[in-house]
Length: 307
Image (cartoon, rainbow, N blue to C red; front, side, top):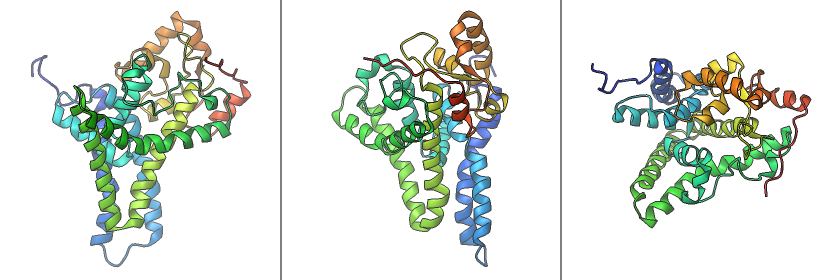
């Protein structure tokens, strides 16, 4: 293979993520197949145990989708589309949702007027829940933003598609992608609504809710209008192993298209050049339930009001 030819996986570090992405839908459908093929009926306790194993396996997939949308895993477009749908089916957070609200929203707020609708509370706004650090505010922020991000993509992409213009085809694809995921959900609910609720709807909700919760942790009390003070970073090794280096959040904001495997070295460079980065870097595990308590004990200064 020549250097200019596309590679099946652009980065060798993505092998584990790619395998987990493609395995996710099979794990999600396994309870439905087991119910149809296994006799006598499987005890409820077995389904409960499998649910925890299933969630443990796929709870990282939304991080994979985030990285994939910034830096596609394959050099082949059809394989990238397969990753899009495989990850979207398991998380409910379609690739179009990430690209529209995150790549073209959260990371590019200076182009906010070009977005179809200002329907996601970006951290650059004076969001009251992001000014004060508390468990209550974290839960309220997550609950407030989850429904909009979960369902809003359908309405926004359809509206923009119907308006026409040079990006109408782009929004049409986003709408059809989200519609395809919801059609699968409806089909699985028709097969067995209880299994669908447990292995599809609940994981989708958790993926959305915890993505908003982690977003709150990284941006609360930070100053979005001051260079290198617009978010926190987490260098905890276990967290970054689990979430594909998502903890190096400021480095990611600094160079969004940089592959996740190179974020630690960029973080070290930023710490050496900008003292603010060290002050906003944490070592505890951001995925842990005690993260908010750590921040409370540190007496995080409320962010300035933006006017």
